[in-house]
Amino acid sequence: MALMLTGLSRESAKFQARSAFSGVGFTTGEAESIVNHPVRRRIVMILMLAGNVGVATVVATIMISFLDLRRSEGVPYSLVVLLIGLTALWIAAASRWVERRLNKVIAWALRRFARLDVRDYVALLNLQEGYAVTEMKIEASDWLANNTLVELNLPQEGILVLGIDRIDPDVYIGAPRARTEVLPGDNLVMYGRIDRLEELTRRRKGRRGDAAHREAINEHYETLAEQESQASGQRQEK
Image (cartoon, rainbow, N blue to C red; front, side, top):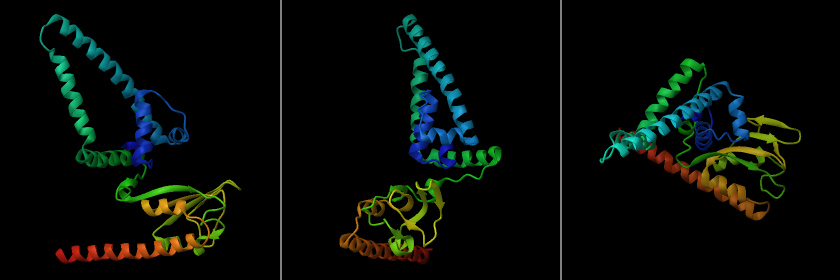
């Protein structure tokens, strides 16, 4: 959760945290982003130390439990405590109620001690409510290729282009302008509904692609009308 609050996605944060805690240490681009980030590096260091201490504690507890088992006929007290503790930790780790409150505590700690303005981007962008931030590699046959953003008119579909990672030349265009052209080889960072983003990645040039664009605009307008109707109904109830 601490890594997620520094900007990593939930899946990336979970993978890197487990990697650090278990001492596996996969070498990936995400790992480099952690090493180059002072706060993430500090979090991972704590996880590595906690993992080593935790493994030693578990091994010692199991050894003592087996020794007690050999000395007594009943179930040893330390083994029962270990099982109860693991069960309690499992329940706490799977609890959304605990996660929401720990997020607030961790966010406060990061702001207080790291002097970093962190955000829970999953909650901020509603990424658990059918929305996503994704990356799309542009091919020459894609509907998006060789068009400017104003010509594509993606916001009318409910899709926002957050940035363009351009390979030739190697440059990142953040918050691109309407006249920015999408070229083959570009990596587009986009935000929108998951089903709409998935359809866009499959869309190709031609009449079918143009028809899919018009259909997506109509669906987005219908979705906006439903959302506005729900918001109006909730205001009237209040």
